[in-house]
Amino acid sequence: QVHLVESGGGLVQAGGSLRLTCAASGRVFSINDMHWHRRAPGKQRELVATISRLGGANYAESVKGRFTISRDNNNNTVYLQMNSLKPEDTAAYYCSAHVVLIGGQPDTSWGQGTQVTVST
Image 1 (cartoon, rainbow, N blue to C red):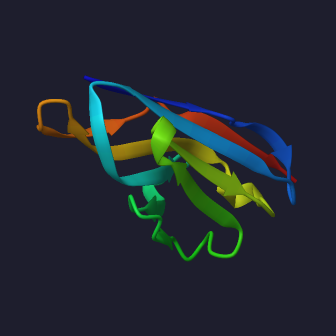
Image 2: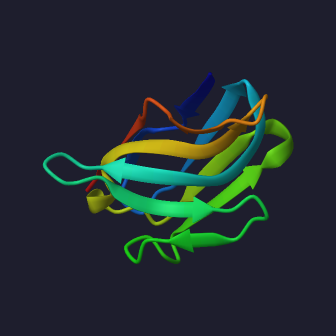
């Protein structure tokens, strides 16, 4: 129904920056909240940031002041700007979205993830 595709991950040194992108396509009528999550090896999935359709954002304490979530409603895309990266930010990053499909049905979609590795 809806496909979310993340990009922008990679290997970066501590203190560096990366910008993740997640684009939604398919039978999208509108998108409400969009989220970025991460899962580090051996750890539970963590909600990193949330942004509402109107742009209100919330962040996990661990990333406040370093990460910024934003979105482009015209292109059904959400971004995560990650600055001052630390080795503990190493994880697979996933986006998810609460979507209203063409036809009116609600749906929650997930991307396949993009790996972020921060070296010391």
